[in-house]
Image (tube, rainbow, N blue to C red; front, top):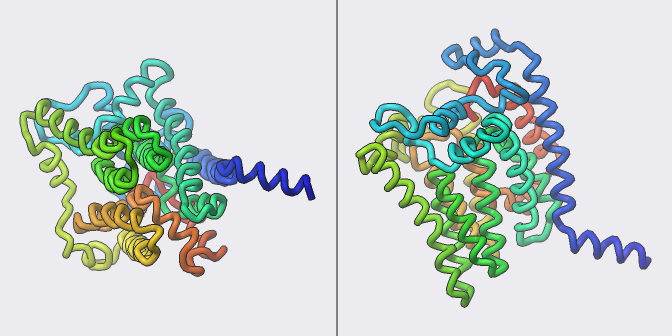
Length: 363
Protein backbone atom coordinates (compact mmCIF):
# COMPACT_ATOMS: atom_id res chain seq x y z
CA UNK A 1 0.00 0.00 0.00
CA UNK A 2 2.87 2.35 0.79
CA UNK A 3 4.34 1.77 -2.67
CA UNK A 4 1.00 2.53 -4.29
CA UNK A 5 0.66 5.79 -2.36
CA UNK A 6 4.22 6.76 -3.29
CA UNK A 7 3.60 6.12 -6.97
CA UNK A 8 0.34 8.07 -6.86
CA UNK A 9 2.06 11.00 -5.16
CA UNK A 10 4.85 10.90 -7.77
CA UNK A 11 2.33 11.11 -10.60
CA UNK A 12 0.62 14.05 -8.89
CA UNK A 13 3.91 15.88 -8.51
CA UNK A 14 4.72 15.32 -12.18
CA UNK A 15 1.43 15.94 -14.00
CA UNK A 16 3.30 16.58 -17.23
CA UNK A 17 4.34 12.93 -17.59
CA UNK A 18 1.01 11.62 -19.00
CA UNK A 19 0.86 14.56 -21.41
CA UNK A 20 4.41 13.92 -22.54
CA UNK A 21 3.66 10.24 -23.17
CA UNK A 22 0.62 11.10 -25.29
CA UNK A 23 2.62 13.70 -27.21
CA UNK A 24 5.35 11.17 -27.99
CA UNK A 25 2.80 8.67 -29.34
CA UNK A 26 1.16 11.42 -31.44
CA UNK A 27 4.56 12.57 -32.68
CA UNK A 28 5.76 9.12 -33.71
CA UNK A 29 2.52 8.41 -35.58
CA UNK A 30 2.49 11.69 -37.51
CA UNK A 31 6.21 11.69 -38.28
CA UNK A 32 5.87 8.13 -39.57
CA UNK A 33 3.01 9.23 -41.81
CA UNK A 34 5.10 12.18 -43.03
CA UNK A 35 8.05 9.94 -43.91
CA UNK A 36 5.76 7.54 -45.76
CA UNK A 37 4.20 10.43 -47.67
CA UNK A 38 7.68 11.44 -48.90
CA UNK A 39 8.10 8.10 -50.64
CA UNK A 40 4.63 8.06 -52.16
CA UNK A 41 4.11 9.80 -55.47
CA UNK A 42 0.51 11.07 -55.31
CA UNK A 43 0.90 13.17 -58.49
CA UNK A 44 -2.26 11.82 -60.08
CA UNK A 45 -4.19 12.20 -56.82
CA UNK A 46 -2.85 15.69 -56.29
CA UNK A 47 -3.71 16.86 -59.78
CA UNK A 48 -7.14 15.25 -59.63
CA UNK A 49 -8.04 16.85 -56.31
CA UNK A 50 -6.56 20.28 -56.90
CA UNK A 51 -4.70 20.74 -60.18
CA UNK A 52 -3.75 24.34 -59.37
CA UNK A 53 -1.72 23.35 -56.32
CA UNK A 54 1.62 21.77 -57.18
CA UNK A 55 4.69 21.84 -54.97
CA UNK A 56 7.32 20.55 -57.37
CA UNK A 57 9.77 23.27 -56.27
CA UNK A 58 9.83 21.84 -52.75
CA UNK A 59 9.99 18.17 -53.66
CA UNK A 60 12.89 16.49 -51.93
CA UNK A 61 13.86 19.62 -50.00
CA UNK A 62 15.37 17.76 -47.07
CA UNK A 63 13.92 15.43 -44.47
CA UNK A 64 10.25 15.97 -43.59
CA UNK A 65 9.85 18.40 -46.49
CA UNK A 66 6.05 17.89 -46.72
CA UNK A 67 5.85 19.78 -43.39
CA UNK A 68 7.45 22.80 -45.07
CA UNK A 69 5.05 23.73 -47.83
CA UNK A 70 2.49 26.44 -48.59
CA UNK A 71 3.38 29.69 -46.86
CA UNK A 72 6.66 28.40 -45.47
CA UNK A 73 8.32 29.66 -48.65
CA UNK A 74 6.90 33.15 -48.04
CA UNK A 75 8.19 33.12 -44.47
CA UNK A 76 11.56 31.94 -45.79
CA UNK A 77 11.71 34.73 -48.36
CA UNK A 78 10.91 37.31 -45.66
CA UNK A 79 13.64 35.86 -43.44
CA UNK A 80 16.15 36.28 -46.26
CA UNK A 81 15.07 39.50 -47.94
CA UNK A 82 12.80 41.25 -45.45
CA UNK A 83 9.44 42.82 -46.26
CA UNK A 84 9.20 44.55 -49.66
CA UNK A 85 9.06 48.37 -49.84
CA UNK A 86 5.75 48.32 -51.73
CA UNK A 87 2.48 46.43 -51.42
CA UNK A 88 1.41 43.88 -53.95
CA UNK A 89 2.39 40.47 -52.65
CA UNK A 90 1.24 38.58 -49.57
CA UNK A 91 4.19 39.35 -47.32
CA UNK A 92 2.39 41.87 -45.11
CA UNK A 93 -0.17 39.24 -44.11
CA UNK A 94 2.58 37.39 -42.21
CA UNK A 95 3.84 38.50 -38.81
CA UNK A 96 7.60 38.80 -38.23
CA UNK A 97 8.36 36.37 -35.39
CA UNK A 98 8.58 33.23 -37.53
CA UNK A 99 10.78 34.83 -40.23
CA UNK A 100 13.06 36.07 -37.44
CA UNK A 101 13.33 32.55 -36.01
CA UNK A 102 14.14 31.12 -39.44
CA UNK A 103 16.75 33.82 -40.01
CA UNK A 104 18.48 33.27 -36.67
CA UNK A 105 18.47 29.49 -36.94
CA UNK A 106 19.33 29.59 -40.62
CA UNK A 107 22.75 30.98 -39.81
CA UNK A 108 23.46 27.97 -37.56
CA UNK A 109 21.70 24.80 -38.81
CA UNK A 110 19.75 26.12 -41.79
CA UNK A 111 16.15 27.38 -41.99
CA UNK A 112 14.63 23.98 -42.86
CA UNK A 113 16.12 22.27 -39.80
CA UNK A 114 15.28 25.30 -37.66
CA UNK A 115 11.64 25.28 -38.72
CA UNK A 116 11.24 21.57 -38.07
CA UNK A 117 13.08 21.55 -34.74
CA UNK A 118 11.24 24.59 -33.37
CA UNK A 119 7.87 23.18 -34.49
CA UNK A 120 8.65 19.82 -32.87
CA UNK A 121 9.73 21.36 -29.56
CA UNK A 122 6.80 23.79 -29.55
CA UNK A 123 4.30 20.99 -30.11
CA UNK A 124 5.61 19.21 -27.01
CA UNK A 125 5.40 22.37 -24.92
CA UNK A 126 1.88 23.00 -26.24
CA UNK A 127 0.73 19.47 -25.33
CA UNK A 128 2.10 19.73 -21.79
CA UNK A 129 0.81 23.28 -21.27
CA UNK A 130 -2.72 22.58 -22.53
CA UNK A 131 -2.91 19.35 -20.52
CA UNK A 132 -1.78 20.71 -17.16
CA UNK A 133 -3.73 23.93 -17.66
CA UNK A 134 -7.12 22.20 -17.72
CA UNK A 135 -8.91 23.26 -14.50
CA UNK A 136 -10.33 19.75 -14.17
CA UNK A 137 -6.86 18.28 -13.66
CA UNK A 138 -7.47 15.56 -16.27
CA UNK A 139 -4.03 15.84 -17.87
CA UNK A 140 -3.93 12.55 -19.76
CA UNK A 141 -7.48 12.88 -21.09
CA UNK A 142 -6.76 16.46 -22.15
CA UNK A 143 -3.58 15.48 -23.99
CA UNK A 144 -5.50 12.73 -25.79
CA UNK A 145 -8.18 15.26 -26.73
CA UNK A 146 -5.53 17.57 -28.23
CA UNK A 147 -3.98 14.68 -30.17
CA UNK A 148 -7.41 13.80 -31.54
CA UNK A 149 -8.51 17.34 -32.39
CA UNK A 150 -8.82 17.46 -36.18
CA UNK A 151 -6.09 19.88 -37.13
CA UNK A 152 -3.56 19.06 -34.40
CA UNK A 153 -1.19 17.93 -37.16
CA UNK A 154 -0.70 21.63 -37.93
CA UNK A 155 1.44 21.89 -34.78
CA UNK A 156 4.17 19.99 -36.66
CA UNK A 157 4.17 22.29 -39.68
CA UNK A 158 7.00 24.76 -40.16
CA UNK A 159 4.52 27.48 -39.30
CA UNK A 160 4.15 29.85 -36.33
CA UNK A 161 1.06 27.97 -35.11
CA UNK A 162 2.94 25.65 -32.75
CA UNK A 163 5.14 28.33 -31.15
CA UNK A 164 2.15 30.69 -30.88
CA UNK A 165 0.00 28.08 -29.10
CA UNK A 166 2.82 27.04 -26.76
CA UNK A 167 3.63 30.66 -25.86
CA UNK A 168 -0.05 31.52 -25.38
CA UNK A 169 -0.92 28.68 -23.02
CA UNK A 170 2.29 29.03 -21.00
CA UNK A 171 1.77 32.79 -20.70
CA UNK A 172 -1.59 32.05 -19.06
CA UNK A 173 -0.15 29.33 -16.82
CA UNK A 174 2.64 31.61 -15.62
CA UNK A 175 0.14 34.43 -15.04
CA UNK A 176 -1.95 32.12 -12.87
CA UNK A 177 1.20 31.42 -10.86
CA UNK A 178 1.87 35.15 -10.42
CA UNK A 179 4.98 35.01 -12.60
CA UNK A 180 4.13 38.12 -14.52
CA UNK A 181 7.48 38.97 -16.11
CA UNK A 182 7.88 35.72 -18.08
CA UNK A 183 4.14 35.82 -18.82
CA UNK A 184 4.65 39.28 -20.31
CA UNK A 185 7.54 38.03 -22.44
CA UNK A 186 5.53 35.13 -23.80
CA UNK A 187 2.48 37.33 -24.38
CA UNK A 188 4.66 39.74 -26.34
CA UNK A 189 5.98 36.83 -28.43
CA UNK A 190 2.44 35.66 -29.20
CA UNK A 191 1.56 39.16 -30.40
CA UNK A 192 4.52 39.03 -32.79
CA UNK A 193 3.67 35.55 -34.07
CA UNK A 194 0.13 35.75 -35.47
CA UNK A 195 -2.62 38.34 -35.94
CA UNK A 196 -4.92 36.51 -33.52
CA UNK A 197 -2.11 36.46 -30.98
CA UNK A 198 -3.48 39.80 -29.81
CA UNK A 199 -6.43 37.92 -28.28
CA UNK A 200 -4.34 36.21 -25.61
CA UNK A 201 -4.51 39.59 -23.87
CA UNK A 202 -8.10 38.68 -22.90
CA UNK A 203 -7.33 35.84 -20.45
CA UNK A 204 -4.19 37.64 -19.25
CA UNK A 205 -6.31 40.69 -18.41
CA UNK A 206 -8.98 38.63 -16.66
CA UNK A 207 -6.34 36.76 -14.65
CA UNK A 208 -4.59 40.04 -13.80
CA UNK A 209 -7.78 41.43 -12.25
CA UNK A 210 -7.48 38.80 -9.52
CA UNK A 211 -3.90 39.73 -8.62
CA UNK A 212 -2.31 42.55 -6.65
CA UNK A 213 1.08 42.56 -8.38
CA UNK A 214 1.93 45.73 -10.31
CA UNK A 215 3.55 43.80 -13.18
CA UNK A 216 0.26 42.13 -14.00
CA UNK A 217 -0.78 45.03 -16.22
CA UNK A 218 2.47 44.81 -18.16
CA UNK A 219 1.69 41.18 -18.98
CA UNK A 220 -1.90 41.99 -19.93
CA UNK A 221 -0.76 44.79 -22.24
CA UNK A 222 2.17 42.92 -23.83
CA UNK A 223 0.25 41.21 -26.71
CA UNK A 224 -1.40 44.50 -27.66
CA UNK A 225 1.90 46.37 -27.56
CA UNK A 226 3.44 43.74 -29.84
CA UNK A 227 0.53 44.01 -32.28
CA UNK A 228 0.83 47.81 -32.43
CA UNK A 229 4.59 47.57 -33.01
CA UNK A 230 4.05 45.13 -35.88
CA UNK A 231 1.51 47.48 -37.49
CA UNK A 232 3.93 50.41 -37.05
CA UNK A 233 6.75 48.37 -38.57
CA UNK A 234 4.60 47.41 -41.56
CA UNK A 235 3.68 51.08 -42.00
CA UNK A 236 7.33 52.13 -41.94
CA UNK A 237 8.35 49.42 -44.42
CA UNK A 238 5.47 49.80 -46.88
CA UNK A 239 4.63 53.49 -46.46
CA UNK A 240 1.02 52.45 -45.88
CA UNK A 241 -0.68 52.53 -42.45
CA UNK A 242 -3.13 49.89 -43.73
CA UNK A 243 -0.55 47.49 -45.17
CA UNK A 244 -1.82 44.54 -43.16
CA UNK A 245 -5.50 45.24 -43.86
CA UNK A 246 -4.97 45.70 -47.58
CA UNK A 247 -2.93 42.54 -47.86
CA UNK A 248 -5.53 40.54 -45.94
CA UNK A 249 -8.16 41.72 -48.43
CA UNK A 250 -6.33 39.78 -51.14
CA UNK A 251 -7.34 36.51 -49.50
CA UNK A 252 -10.92 37.03 -50.74
CA UNK A 253 -12.53 36.81 -47.35
CA UNK A 254 -16.05 38.11 -46.94
CA UNK A 255 -18.48 39.20 -44.24
CA UNK A 256 -19.93 37.18 -41.33
CA UNK A 257 -23.16 36.60 -43.22
CA UNK A 258 -21.19 34.88 -46.01
CA UNK A 259 -20.25 32.07 -43.63
CA UNK A 260 -23.07 29.60 -44.49
CA UNK A 261 -22.36 29.92 -48.19
CA UNK A 262 -18.66 29.43 -47.54
CA UNK A 263 -19.31 26.16 -45.74
CA UNK A 264 -22.24 24.68 -47.62
CA UNK A 265 -23.06 26.97 -50.57
CA UNK A 266 -21.65 24.69 -53.26
CA UNK A 267 -20.20 21.23 -53.48
CA UNK A 268 -16.67 21.30 -52.09
CA UNK A 269 -15.83 18.50 -49.71
CA UNK A 270 -13.02 20.36 -47.97
CA UNK A 271 -15.32 23.33 -47.30
CA UNK A 272 -18.02 20.99 -45.99
CA UNK A 273 -15.41 19.38 -43.75
CA UNK A 274 -14.38 22.79 -42.41
CA UNK A 275 -18.04 23.68 -41.96
CA UNK A 276 -18.58 20.64 -39.75
CA UNK A 277 -15.46 21.52 -37.75
CA UNK A 278 -16.79 25.05 -37.29
CA UNK A 279 -20.06 23.69 -35.86
CA UNK A 280 -18.12 21.40 -33.50
CA UNK A 281 -16.00 24.36 -32.37
CA UNK A 282 -19.09 26.44 -31.65
CA UNK A 283 -20.62 23.53 -29.72
CA UNK A 284 -17.50 23.15 -27.57
CA UNK A 285 -17.51 26.89 -26.95
CA UNK A 286 -21.13 26.70 -25.75
CA UNK A 287 -20.08 24.00 -23.27
CA UNK A 288 -17.44 26.37 -21.89
CA UNK A 289 -20.04 29.10 -21.41
CA UNK A 290 -22.26 26.72 -19.44
CA UNK A 291 -19.51 26.13 -16.88
CA UNK A 292 -18.90 29.02 -14.48
CA UNK A 293 -15.35 27.86 -13.70
CA UNK A 294 -14.49 28.10 -17.41
CA UNK A 295 -15.98 31.54 -18.01
CA UNK A 296 -12.65 33.29 -18.65
CA UNK A 297 -11.78 30.67 -21.21
CA UNK A 298 -15.21 30.85 -22.82
CA UNK A 299 -14.69 34.57 -23.46
CA UNK A 300 -11.27 33.96 -24.98
CA UNK A 301 -12.41 31.05 -27.18
CA UNK A 302 -15.39 33.04 -28.40
CA UNK A 303 -13.08 35.87 -29.43
CA UNK A 304 -10.77 33.52 -31.35
CA UNK A 305 -13.67 31.86 -33.19
CA UNK A 306 -15.31 35.22 -33.89
CA UNK A 307 -12.10 36.54 -35.43
CA UNK A 308 -11.82 33.46 -37.65
CA UNK A 309 -15.44 32.89 -38.63
CA UNK A 310 -16.23 36.62 -38.71
CA UNK A 311 -14.14 36.86 -41.86
CA UNK A 312 -16.94 35.07 -43.69
CA UNK A 313 -15.12 31.81 -44.40
CA UNK A 314 -14.53 28.50 -42.66
CA UNK A 315 -11.13 28.10 -44.31
CA UNK A 316 -8.39 27.03 -41.87
CA UNK A 317 -10.83 26.68 -38.97
CA UNK A 318 -9.06 23.47 -37.91
CA UNK A 319 -5.84 25.41 -37.27
CA UNK A 320 -7.62 28.35 -35.67
CA UNK A 321 -9.45 26.02 -33.26
CA UNK A 322 -6.11 24.99 -31.82
CA UNK A 323 -5.29 28.54 -30.77
CA UNK A 324 -8.59 28.53 -28.85
CA UNK A 325 -7.02 25.89 -26.62
CA UNK A 326 -9.83 25.84 -24.00
CA UNK A 327 -11.89 24.05 -26.66
CA UNK A 328 -9.59 21.08 -26.03
CA UNK A 329 -10.62 21.19 -22.37
CA UNK A 330 -14.26 21.14 -23.44
CA UNK A 331 -13.56 18.13 -25.66
CA UNK A 332 -11.83 16.35 -22.77
CA UNK A 333 -14.52 17.05 -20.16
CA UNK A 334 -17.60 17.78 -22.21
CA UNK A 335 -20.32 15.75 -23.93
CA UNK A 336 -19.84 11.98 -23.90
CA UNK A 337 -20.21 11.78 -27.69
CA UNK A 338 -17.05 13.87 -28.05
CA UNK A 339 -15.13 11.85 -25.47
CA UNK A 340 -16.00 8.35 -26.68
CA UNK A 341 -13.32 6.17 -28.29
CA UNK A 342 -14.77 5.99 -31.85
CA UNK A 343 -15.08 9.78 -32.10
CA UNK A 344 -11.57 10.31 -30.73
CA UNK A 345 -10.15 7.67 -33.07
CA UNK A 346 -11.81 9.38 -36.01
CA UNK A 347 -10.26 12.71 -35.03
CA UNK A 348 -6.78 11.21 -34.79
CA UNK A 349 -7.22 9.35 -38.07
CA UNK A 350 -8.13 12.62 -39.78
CA UNK A 351 -4.81 14.07 -38.68
CA UNK A 352 -2.98 11.17 -40.30
CA UNK A 353 -5.17 11.52 -43.39
CA UNK A 354 -4.28 15.21 -43.77
CA UNK A 355 -0.59 14.46 -43.40
CA UNK A 356 -0.85 12.40 -46.59
CA UNK A 357 -2.75 15.20 -48.35
CA UNK A 358 -0.48 18.04 -47.27
CA UNK A 359 0.52 18.65 -50.87
CA UNK A 360 -3.08 19.00 -51.97
CA UNK A 361 -4.67 21.52 -49.66
CA UNK A 362 -4.07 24.17 -47.09
CA UNK A 363 -4.92 22.97 -43.57
